[in-house]
Image (cartoon, rainbow, N blue to C red):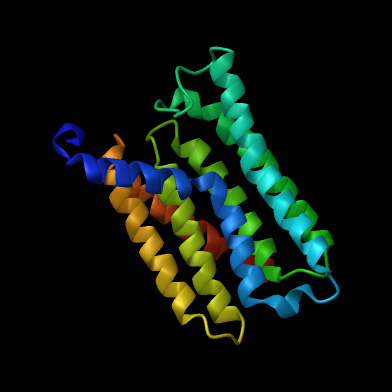
Length: 212
């Protein structure tokens, strides 16, 4: 299917897959909260808030990505793209650890949105379920990520008295773009893409009601 896809669509799909990689989703969500819920960060200086954003990227994107790079260099995987279910086991465990750590830290901070608590808990549950499901199906990590992001943005609009319509529409658009991109440039089946969306959606809803 990919060979018959026009080059411009393939390159666009690959570009979207990179910039909307699931490892970047927590950083994007943090940026979103900084924009729509500034009143939840009262008492934090701009510099401190920037450092927190950097720490989110460092712990949820850089370290897991570096671990995948090390796996590849140590010949534990054939590529950094984790094309097989076996290659995804260790990255799942690593990201689970960092997501749990972010949730643990978020419970002890009183100067940040409760949305971060349920979001971190949700992505932790999602990776745990993804690890289990990985024994049977190669769930799309990209759709799991955007499914969780879309649901979290919707929940924020529901939980807080803010005008969230534009952000919700943007989240829907991002989700549609990622699903389309993965259909173009990945070897995932439609069932694997849908499974990722459902896991992302359900785990955020579960986490919200658990934390609240």
